[in-house]
Structure formats: C-alpha cells, structure tokens
Image (tube, rainbow, N blue to C red):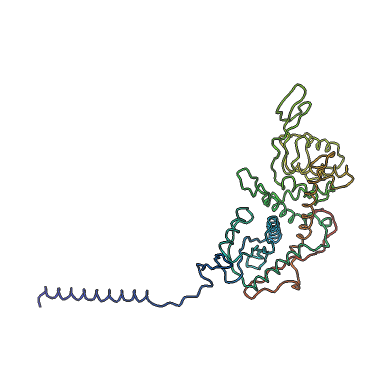
Length: 429
C-alpha cells in the first residue's frame, strides 16, 4: 500500500468518526429537550384567569383570602401608632377599617410587627385601591399574599388583642411615671407625629423633615425637664406641641405682621408711617411662638422667682433676648413658662389656658383647645401603655393559637405594670 493510499484511508476514518460523534451528540441534545420532567405544581397560576362575577369581570389572584402586607416594623409601639393612624385616615373616607390588621410574629431577628389589609380577590380592584393608598402617602408599598380562612381568623384575633392591650385602662397613670420610664416611648411618639404631619406627607420640596430618633430623644428629654420644672400637665403640654408644629423646628406665619408705636431692638421693620411701624411677627420654631409673644415671655422670665439652675443649661433663657438668633431648646422653656402663666391666670383650667395659648387671654380659642385635648388624651393613652412594652408577658392565657403553618406571634403587651410613684423624675434624681 502506497503512502498516499494510507493517508486517504486514515482521513476517511477520522471523517466517519467525527460524523458518528456529532450524530450521538445531536441525538443526546434532542433527547434532553424532549425528556419529560416532573415539575412541582404551582400554588396558583402565574397568570390569573379572568371570571365573570355578578355581571362584572374580575381577575382573582388568590385561591383563599386575598391580602396585602403594607408595612413591617420591629418596634411594637411604632407599629401600633401607624396601625391606628392608617385606620383613622381610612375611617375618614368611609372605608371598612376592620379589614386593616396588625399582626406579630417571632423571627430570628426578634419580634416583627406587620400591617395587612384584607383585599378583594380581584386585581382589577385591589391594585387600584392599594395604589391610591400609596398616592395618599399612607403606605410606602405592598406585597400581595394569600391566606387560608384559618390564617384570617388567627390574625383577626391577634389584631383584636392589640386593640384590647392598648385600650383597657391601666393601673399606672402618666403622673406616676418617671422620666427614665417615659423617655423612650415619648421619643418614638414625637417621631411618629412628625412623620405623619400633613406637610411631610405632601413630600414637596418645601416640606419639613421629620425628626430623627436622636432629635426626638433630645426634645423628649427637654419636654420632660420643662414639664417637671413648671409643674405642667405633660399630656396637655404635648398637645400644644402637636397642634403648633408637630414638634418640628420650622418657622411659620412668615407673612404675619403687627403695627407698633415704635420699633424695638431686633425688630424687622416692614413699613413706617409718621406715628407707627409695621414689624414682622412670624412664629418661631417647634412651639410657634410669635416674636412679639416671645418678648412678653421673656419679660415673664426676668420677673420669675423660680430657681432656673435646676434646669439643664441648654434650657435656660439668656438674660438678654436676641429674637434673630433663638435656640430652639430655649423655646421649649418659653413655651412651658407661657402655659404655666396661663394655667395660673385661669385657676388651673386647662381648656381655657390652652385656648388662650392660641387665641389670647381675652379670646381663648375653643377649637384649638379641643384639638389640644384630643392629642392630650391620645398621648396619655399611648404613653401609659407603652412603658410596659419592655416587660414580656409570662402567661399565654390570652394569646391566640397560631395555625400550624404560621409562626407563633410575639404577644401583645400586658395592660398594666406596677410603676414607681414619682412624677416625671429622671433615673438619677
């Protein structure tokens, strides 16, 4: 056999071998494509099938009870405050608030509190409703989910347990709690009120920023110190702060002005005539004290015989008032002094005193006083219950039994916890 013939046969052999390998590989690939696989059956179709119900088209998305998780918190008080707020806003527009539920579950990171809304089992109505809540800044997002009837009954019992825990009267009263006990809960309350201010929810460029936790903690400490120093009813003092500026350091009524016989030091003169001057009288800071009222408050301070060394240094007013450079911490002191003076003037009548804080001694504002009272009652209820949150219940007598598929929730706080009988005292007093 010649060398040429040998190489020709060798080439044909490799060509046949290559063809055979390609045929086997192609057959294996095709077999893999056609091989029947056992896939798990989905819980419900990815694309829901439309139906006709009651002469209208619906798009069900849940095989059971349709719901949406709209908020998650890791702090019980914060969760309950937002839960009540959402229900209150929905009640104003006539929505069924019984479909809003607060639930709790134990997780590896600790208790988790979640707010759910039971929805119509119809994407064509559920999603527009949830999108409307987002548009009103009542929720920041949502996750659709499906419950069994057993799940729903359990979560309804849980939510009812929270209402009972925060609704029943407590043995401990606000006046019996010291500052050390009140401070954490009060700080969270201030943060919540600033977050739900209508201007903040508006999210415009000019909207004020809500309090940070550090800012709220410092303001809460200042409020407690001033309330104790002037012997003020803490709940009504908080009511004034909420009505004025929801505890945020933002000036208001910037266009407000008053006429005076002559300009004084620090006045911002807007207009002059031969006998009078018009000066700016905008409201300053957290407590919205007008510039002219602040002058009057400072005169009260200069005449006051109380020992102001008992106040922290940051809360002591200066001997010389500078209207154009006011420390917001000192404004808390001035607000307390004004409210104390009004309470003394009206013989302790808080309704008249708080009405006069807005309308003046001659014409107290009853609508303003009513708003202060509403906030005061709310703050009292929240703070009296919130101080027990750090003490978990030792009995599961009233804790609902969770379905087998649901983690056991963290129990709601006990309704009462014995506390010390020292009004608004710090831990180191």
